[in-house]
Image (cartoon, rainbow, N blue to C red; front, side, top):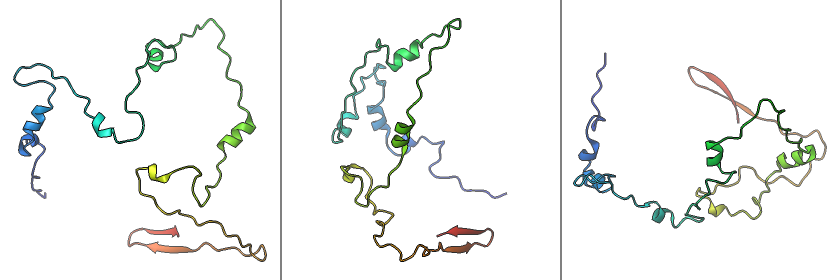
Length: 161
């Protein structure tokens, strides 16, 4: 049997003390160790997210509103088994549904009125090039897909490239 060295630091050690974080942990502890009273917690994330766009304060909701999730969770609507079930929602218009769920190709210039710089990710070049405007001379010219074969010693696999 192979013996492995014990990792340093170990998960069984007091890592807070080992890395010198005891004072920091005591300063943010919920209970004050000297008086054993609860400390008031600060809204610590507010100043950290203040430079982000958007609203930073959650508006207070009305828990008595019949449409609130809290009200639905507390008292879901009762169904009387002696009564017929409520009518189902009318069927959706198929034309509207097909237009809403159809996907158009994104133009090479990107999505109109969309600023990519607002995203927190780096911008990458478009994966596909814009379609060619030249048409082939006859309909028989097609590009052939090229397949390359990659093998490793145990599992031969074939990938499309």
